[in-house]
Length: 440
Image (cartoon, rainbow, N blue to C red):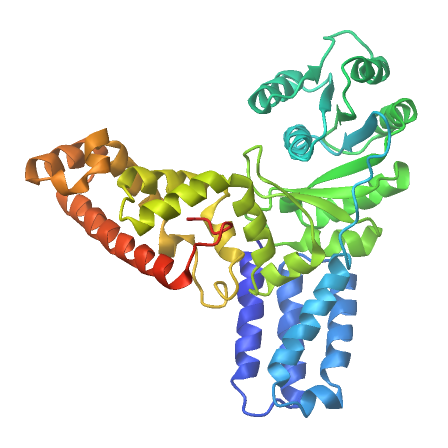
């Protein structure tokens, strides 16, 4: 997420720190690099111009230049201005109706259907009872896709079938929701390959029938400035209450995220950074600015950990560690828990300082995690509980079964023993492991 932009900002700040005394010429040079980095990230040129002017004006102040830590103050200024561009503060999700209507709009291929399912799962996890509505009757397999995703998360779908007009589907869905005691109706509308009058006319009709509390425009962040143009056109035709940025895990330069709110005035409410139904995050401007600048986002990391951690299991694991009862079976369970938190590169980006140090997922190794999992799964239950019984013949069998070498098996077993000692020392010194730590 914003990896290229983050690396370029890191180089700018590193160069500033390299000077014993930061002068006006250094700041002007830094602003040229910031401007270039933002333009290469496909940020709207007007947004870039205003951003650089504001940062430069504040950074050239006497208080900054005379400071003992001017580089840190400039980082703070850039962070504050990024937060300003991204929307200042998170905008609350308005769901006051009974049932509350949410209308999902956007072009075909932007990820509307996937987002609808992700939003349903997100809201259900917060105590609501959503009903998904398949109102995209034009795209082949759109209804099937929504039903498959909904079955994965256990949320019902209202899909009366072909031949029923869209406006009638939406109207009937509200009555169906009241009958089934659903408090939220999420309507997945049809998109087109480009904006046209027919699509907009249908969306306006749907809006009149649904009377939604929220109208969310889904934008493909990989399209850069095209996403900003789409948002502008939608804003003129059918006003929306919030924006959703999808595919932030792809080869995106970040321009859409840094431009769309400044250009349209509408807040980003959610971002999707993965294909799984759980890969949805509420958008916080200050947290996103921190990630872009390599400051991390420890709050979001802790929230992700809390979503996958069972407190009772954490306490049981702590007892095992104290009694040296931690097994390879427990280790495998912790790997599974870590994987549920999301892609490893995104988790690393949330840890303060990691981006600045140049650490990425390959350094820790997604492949290495898969290798470890394959090795442990090739062991018998007895071997997982008692690794000390794994002799030479067992190691050869495990290596053949997991597609690895005996040396790989030896390395894992040695690392496991070292990790057990380290974690045992940690529990002794810390008193107790934090309940929201991913491996607790």
